[in-house]
Length: 118
Image 1 (cartoon, rainbow, N blue to C red):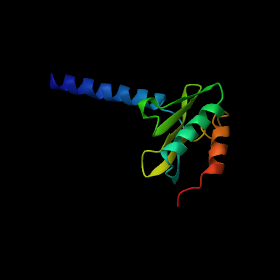
Image 2: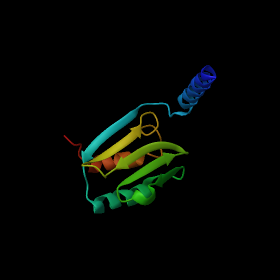
Image 3: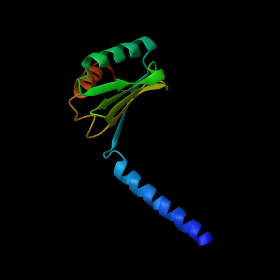
Image 4: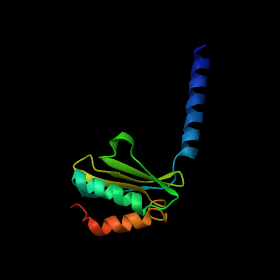
């Protein structure tokens, strides 16, 4: 009976690992840090993002919209901007965020306004 439980457990772990491998986003993550911005500046960045993203992109943050925003392009995660820590963090999927046309205008605009953190 014990060996049957272990066999089922191992089979479940193998199936779970296989599913996770094929459903994880492919590509590396890119992290950029900038000095933390004020709440008013982040609200302005959020409004600017709403105006600059294209129609095939979606911007969301749920109840934490004062601290972070999430940009998806065609249903795929492309960019996460987090202002809740001691720095402003940009987390993007390399190959998606940097090459996706719906994110490029936003990244170009913000990179001209923000100076990288030391």
